[in-house]
Image 1 (cartoon, rainbow, N blue to C red):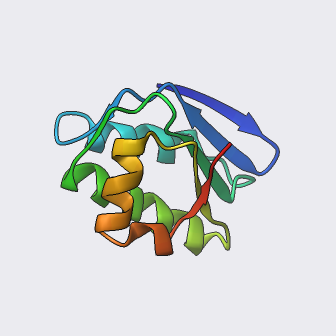
Image 2 (cartoon, one colour):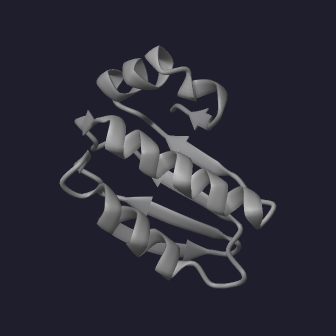
Length: 100
């Protein structure tokens, strides 16, 4: 996982999996990387092959964190399997999803 700060946005990339094994540490690392200046979170899912219910819970937790700062979470370039999970769980209605 790679974290970069771009203005008021925390950009997270190189996420291989987002599941029970790593979702809590993913959430904690993202939150601790946010300073008072960051409102938005962008998560690049182009390399993510697996997301489970714990991973979805982490995305919701980060969504709540961003909303409390009057920001938002954008999911960038989800792989087809991740896009399918987002649609099946109707998460695509909560997050802004940006495709190439």
